[in-house]
Length: 389
Image 1 (tube, helix red, strand yellow):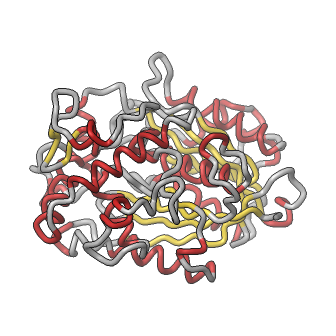
Image 2 (spheres, helix red, strand yellow):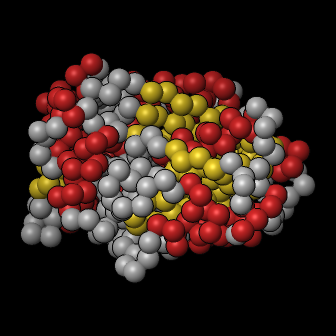
């Protein structure tokens, strides 16, 4: 790949009362430019990732980036959407533009503000990322969809409640070290494993601690071609960046196989000329704990149906053989849909440059990212490494 991340910015995720999408966009756009040490006038192209679809009234948001600096005026700006993988889709658009030689520097912003509508409205809006002809009547929005996936997984491979609770506990423990995370509380395995008033069943076998958080937030990266990146103070290269989309209806595929994520991982590792064991960490899309469990299998960490081994034997803990979600993941960090993919790239870039603070995996130089839209429909895998070692 010819693209590199040369600067970034990230708001804290959570409920941002009194702030609108515009203010979140402006904050990270200004921050990413400052971090990269470049001016708005130097940017050739802007991509803005947001799912929206009704979370806020303001649509057509790409040119809101221009509110950060009048020097953006008249530059091409495009809004990108690919459900929960929107942020990574916007980054890939930037990488493709650089690879085509039509831009040298690209600003990518991901943003979402989900807390202005009710919980019932959030569920309905998120269901727009499902195949509504067949899946519209599933109760509980996407929690209901992944509740069904969890039920089917339990039926085929046995009760995995212990593994799901371990994943939730791991990610909440990791999130304590992430100053950007929405929930920085080490809830512990027993709380995550036990049904209670504070941790009720949400859908199928999934409890509240199995579900990611409704969030507001934004993140941004500046992308540059390699030659430009070498002249800047820091640069994180894309060793690989792959996209694989699958059928939208769950009825057209084995929903437990996660074939799309598996193929995206296979293509990315092949393009990077790496094995999974070469990676120092992975940021993966734990919208629900059952998703992270199946993603262990999709990335090749464990055979199909045996993903529980990865968490129960400690492989994916921060001190395990492949730390997964040292940031706390979506589970602890929050999941403002359009910002999530950009956030994952920022946190992985921080790791491979040794700037992750208390989240840091010692000596990390290769990081994998899986950002998934819908129920394994839009799947993006990136592998990052520092351009200069």
